[in-house]
Image (cartoon, rainbow, N blue to C red):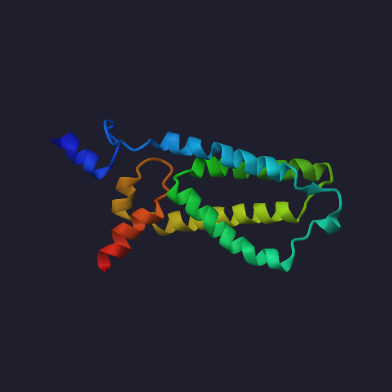
Length: 159
């Protein structure tokens, strides 16, 4: 009886028919996406500092792009994959800086979007840090609650 109650709380957690894929499988689905983003990013360097400026119109798009990645990271529960990619990008920027290579506008856009995403995820986690229900649902060292879980718990229950 207790196992049935646990399955109702966390669909697919116990396996069996109708089980949802585990978190490691869901993260594995995004590996090619982040690998391709990193490969693209590695080609976004230029020797000219003048070409290392982002147009004003691109600055307006950094916010929606950062929000999109924030949703992808939080709802997809892929924070570890995201942070690994972000630090790999940061390491590449520092390595290329020693070679006197600078990010071009596309690289600046992608790096700025990822930096904004990291900030948004940090704010999201800080805001929901003391939520007892979400803390129970997302146990462990890395706590990144899903927006949909927050919505169903706090927003839709009030309507």
